[in-house]
Length: 142
Image (cartoon, rainbow, N blue to C red; front, side, top):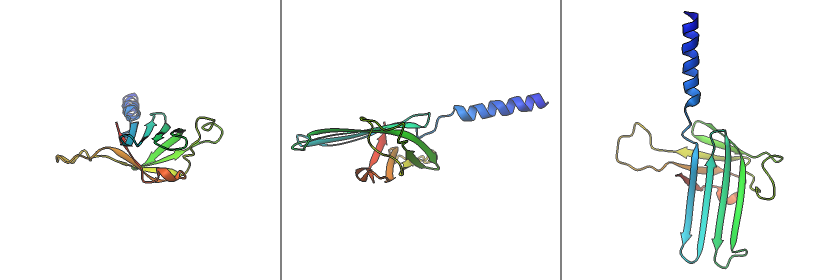
């Protein structure tokens, strides 16, 4: 009997770990005006708790006209708020320069119980960040 209960508990716990979180995936946002500017944000939240961020901007008359900025680090979620962190020793180099420490984003999606035809895109909205231009940015899940 003890063996049966232990086996059932083990199987139950394994199925909990096998489920992926709804946060994991690719998010992006593109803002553009033909012939004038193009701004693109890409964020990838990996299953292992790491993330990659890429910002690309091409501004007509800008100096420089094209800019790529990158960031990486770790993320964790509590309720629907995702907290980002970057380790100064591991996550920064000449390519990855954005500091996501103290950055938080709210995850928003359609409630599975909502059976209406209302369309709610799954997104992350940055609430706090040391990166001034990322505050209040919405990135949508692909």
